[in-house]
Amino acid sequence: MSFHPEPELRGHTLVVTVSSHDGRPVLDRHAYASLARTLHEAAVDDEVRVVMLRGLAGCFCLGGDFSEFLDATKHRELIDAVTDMFRMLATFPKPVLACVDGDAVGVGCTILFHCDMVIASRGSTFRVPFVDFGLVPDAATSILAPQKLGYAGAFRFFCLGDTLGVEDAKALGLVGEIVTQGSAEEATLARAKQLAKKPVAALLQTRSLLKGDTDVLCDRIDHEITLFQQALQDDTTLKRLQRIARLAA
Image (cartoon, rainbow, N blue to C red):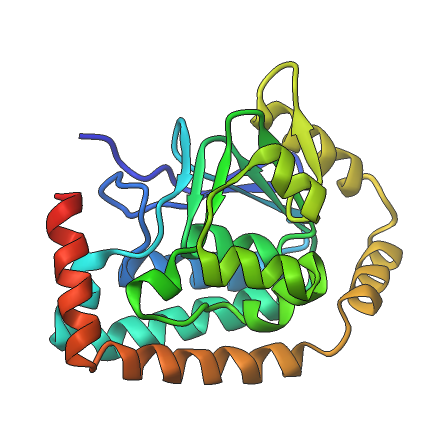
């Protein structure tokens, strides 16, 4: 069995692996809490100038843990952990780069909208099947996706649930760079190192100006989570999720 690698400081770049702690390419309530805690600590650590999010080998993240969606006893803790992590990501004051090598699905894709740069390997794919599951998008992507992809692009991506190849994702603006030689991780670390060398105050201030008012994002995160929680209490949605979980088993 593989296990979740601990965050690793490489120079001034904190490398954070997006996965559960038992080595699955999904996020459960413990993984959300761990990510929020890691980001909180990195925000106040002067040694950390850039954060790089990566997945496990060959996969960025396949989304949330379905078993927690279907277990009502875990919903409150799950919702609290998800909200904390998304709010921390939305308000994080330092550059965040994503290294995508493989599939980015569901929340594994929506967290990319908070990243300042997404660098992906040629075989990477992106999908947000929330509507197919009877759920709404999360992470304030109902604001961020139309901003980044345009309304029509966001509508097609979220409402049709189509899988985007890396070229289409770059054309829409979700992916910033496609790696054609070497590894995506090496390329992302090189970009992180380049950023870490910049004058810190000027970099952070410029990023803050570009990001704008994050309170709007936090308010939307809360609203989306409320709708998400309501959907998890709907019998039709639960039956759909149970059917999908059986097919995936």
